[in-house]
Image 1 (cartoon, rainbow, N blue to C red):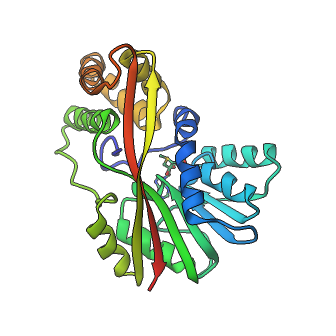
Image 2: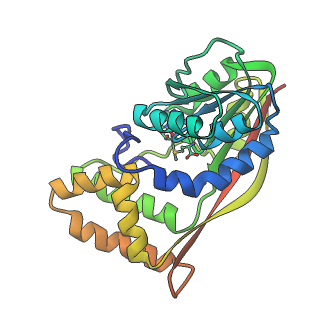
Length: 268
Ligand SMILES: C[S@@+](CC[C@H](N)C(=O)[O-])C[C@H]1O[C@@H](n2cnc3c(N)ncnc32)[C@H](O)[C@@H]1O
């Protein structure tokens, strides 16, 4: 997944991210299990969204803080915690600026959150700062491939062309074993990768998937508005539909499999 323009950070409170969050919940469960979160541990969920990993950690009895740049999604996290009768402290912040003292957490979790940080180095430095000496970081990251990556890339390119921006520079390779090892090493940490795991996204047809995505996903809603303002929306939607059709794994409906890894990091 990539930002629609590459320059403007997405407001993840736009649209209805809750729909995507439900689809990412199984990965949050994989993440919390891989991190082996225990009762009484101090845990932070960075880029918590609607609180998927935070709530699962809290259900295990951890003392949980949830951080996100979107005030609306933090409010959703808070409401879900109340509904589930678990305590989660929600705080506005982002990966490169975590509102917490040094060494405050036994475990830093991030379910497809920190991978959106504009500066991967700053994000890992900050996660290392708030981590206890014997703590661990656990995060999920997409592997390349599948219809949804192709869709995000095509959408990004269409929006960039519409506003006259050059192709987006490549971001940090959160899926690449040696890039991850080198990045965490700079902050005194070693990494282990777990997986690959899979998430399957389905709909009755490619048209239905695209329609739901365009109405709900914050990046899609933001990008489509840019295309509409410039009169490119109709043609762009046709092209995006073709991307989904050509990658569809189910000829009778729509299915796309996305693969991801869990990155586990500890101090050396
Ligand atoms: C794909 S969503 C994942 C949300 C959640 N972890 C989940 O399991 O559904 C990405 C989340 O990262 C947040 N985010 C975007 N930029 C961020 C940054 N620089 N630091 C931390 N979180 C960020 C967004 O607000 C959004 O909630």
